[in-house]
Figure 1 (cartoon, rainbow, N blue to C red):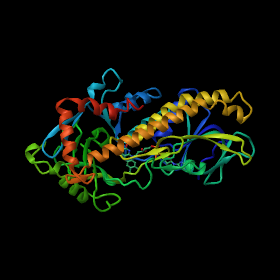
Figure 2 (figure 1 turned 45 degrees about the vertical axis):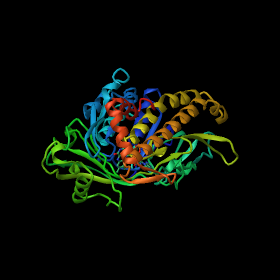
Figure 3 (figure 1 turned 120 degrees about the vertical axis):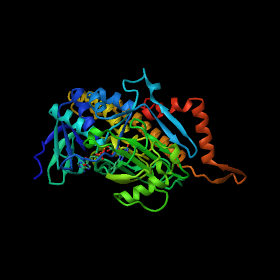
Figure 4 (figure 1 turned 90 degrees about the vertical axis):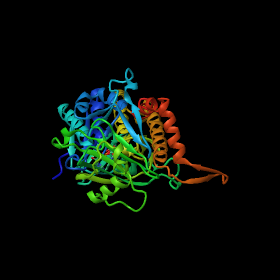
Length: 447
Ligand SMILES: Cc1cc2nc3c(=O)[nH]c(=O)nc-3n(C[C@H](O)[C@H](O)[C@H](O)COP(=O)(O)OP(=O)(O)OC[C@H]3O[C@@H](n4cnc5c(N)ncnc54)[C@H](O)[C@@H]3O)c2cc1C
């Protein structure tokens, strides 16, 4: 049995993932209370997925809900180290962010914990969330000008002025609105970086690195990342997120321990000489709690804001896209959920203001005249998404350079991995990397 939906709402948020929940909280905070959240799933997911929450995201969330609740559930990393095949190099010093954010660190916390905190906030504020309700289509309303009819799988219809599509990469809202979702560099751009990879939450027999210190290994043509996760989320167990490219072949759907152990040995901390490791013992995975695979494709919606039009060309309700529905990109730097949460947090004040002013107007044309702030929000979020796609693609290429000589312009022999390692070393000895990396990752320059 699916729940009885309201026949009408000012704002319909489709998707109760992290971005939909954050959008609902932000709208509510700014006075928009006639809003409804729907989600096709019976319950929110209980897997860790995105584990990095950056300073700019915590700052933005703190405006809509006490971000400290999320911080208290996570591991604060203030630095990290990279093994470049010869030596460890310090990777970042997040204390450089002090004075620029309330949260000068990189927080590691499983996505389901973030969703739980946001979900509790939504519940406390009495915002209606209807689960097991799947949107299948949306069209300009025939009954009331300026409204959108949203159709559900079970035959129910909800009329709304605004649809916020927070329904993930395969967004029905985006598809039914006819907004394209493509790689800004073209779908067939040759990409030298690894395309497929795996992520897993595992326990080890010994610590691969300190419990507050992420570790990165950069072997030829690949990367391996090892991140400490909060033991409070795993019944006291010391769990690590590992992420690694799979340069050849297709990884299984939920990679088993043996497959993951092979990657640890070939590309990960297992490949570091025992004398340089945290413990000289062989590093063994003792349990795989969750595992998945990923693909490093990118896409951005042509626009995150548009208005539907009636067959006669008159403007109708507004459609807004946030989160994965608006953009996807390689997982390097763990930016995906962060960018989406900031889309949501910054949408609230703009959309709530629009709802407030449109209530006094009678025609959709008049409402459209108020669209400038929404368009400005959309343009800014689109630019932010393009920046993240650009930077995550570039860092994936840098991280997975091959230790081979290639001929540039047919005459100059270059080994890009050696060049990268030299630049990394230079940036480290001068202290530049430790200052730049936190700024790049934190999102503070691309809020
Ligand atoms: C296996 C996996 C691993 C990941 N690992 C990482 C990682 O390591 N680092 C990282 O940064 N990111 C990672 N991500 C991505 C990260 O999870 C997303 O960026 C984040 O969840 C985006 O949030 P969202 O709210 O936009 O979308 P989602 O979390 O996808 O939520 C969309 C919601 O919309 C609902 N929905 C969909 N269609 C409909 C419909 N038609 N009607 C009603 N409801 C609908 C869905 O049920 C879902 O609850 C991973 C994702 C997956 C799947």
